Length: 414
Image 1: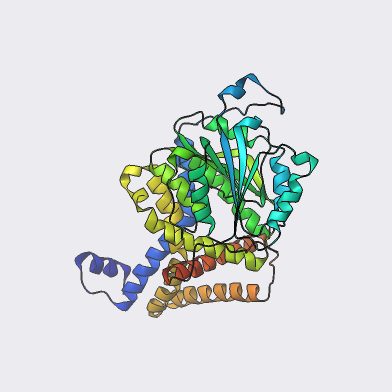
Image 2: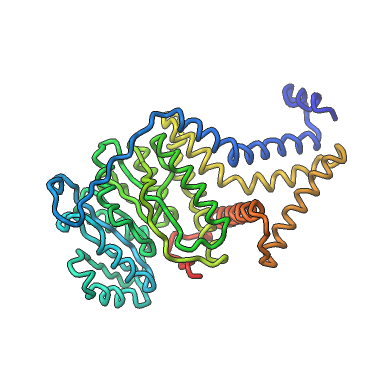
């Protein structure tokens, strides 16, 4: 059936043939896939380039000695929820002991959530080391496992500082990060700040490429005034803007900053300083992490619907294009394959298109089952991308069927 006839049938409401339905569904799915992966990043880049450049504040230099401007610095509380972190807690405490900030203006609160390993003992031993002498640390050791979000809610509500920095135990912070964060919050329009993120040992080239891409996207989002979520390795907020989260929240480091953005504050990205992730994940662990994040992506659409209001402006555009569409990508890819099967009778080109999809997915499945690493970098990146979509589908289905819970899960170990 000619394409012109198909279009007329759609316009005038005439019942469409199976082939027509297949073509329309295929076209819509393909358009969404292209928009999310190609057109949206280009459009975001153009919008960011046209936006007035907001200068990053200068980072004060103290040299670990008292300075005159110390009197105007805000108080900061570093909150670290922890569950079975015996492998990383010592390195984290030694790292915190090197942070440059007035000692009477900050403290560390470690919230142990029912740990059943040696996290507490390892922390106590490390705090006795000379380099950790004077480190302002409070350890709250809960015997029951209430979940990360419950502990974050309790710790922030009990905080007495004006700023709160949330940080994973497995990530090392730059020595001047507190000074940099304080400089950002001098701007009353700023409600939250995310540090950058680097991997000590990327699990694959695709993983490194993904985080490089994410860094570029977040820098552009920051220019538009609203980074879409923060890195759990290190991000800060104004305590007065905190809104407690439901205990079953999965992606707390996305929903919390976006709640602040919805209140009209800027969420910015500090690209000059990055937290360093120490732990290296296995392939299985990486997929479990991505599956969990995907479940959280599905959850956060329902919980942040107000961000899709046209009144939110650029925030709504970025949330819809960057986060919401990500949830639908595996369904679009699956829809393209199934829809293609409906119009095979239109010609050899339709059959070739269908076979190309089958061969592509078949090669992807075989490559991962055999743990084969392709030589071409482009194929490695595509493979990582498809693994992400598979985890996205898996996580989305798990959340919609009630099988994904917002509790601690150890998936980092290599």
